[in-house]
Length: 172
Image (tube, rainbow, N blue to C red; front, side, top):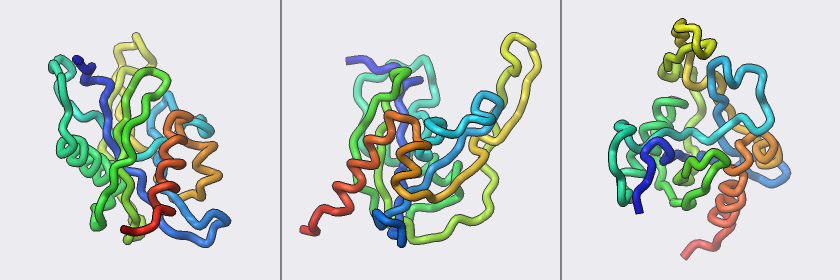
């Protein structure tokens, strides 16, 4: 089965234990730029990015190592965090527009530090032939699970349930 390379992403759901009611907090990011300005509920995401740089690539299969490498790269670029703990696969979800997001969970063992994410350039407003540069991510924060359920892209909320199952699972 062929896969559209523009619709395959990988990311990391970073979590930490907290004094919140459910005992967990997760890291979410708010996309920068004019399209997401002023949008809050349902607009946030886990740190993630495209697995394939070439939009014309013909993709038949995606190996786990490539997904992990992409997830780590995007986590570092968007948040400045460098994975220092093992990552566990949470599987994939499909967002409304058809993008498949492969997610991994990682426990946070470091605090957020000031970080400047990469900038992206787009034509804005569309059709204006004017190019605008903005930060790929304009906010990064830890939130409790209840808040994350409201702020995350609706399809990504399923990843929270999978995370709880992994965190609550007894150790082997």
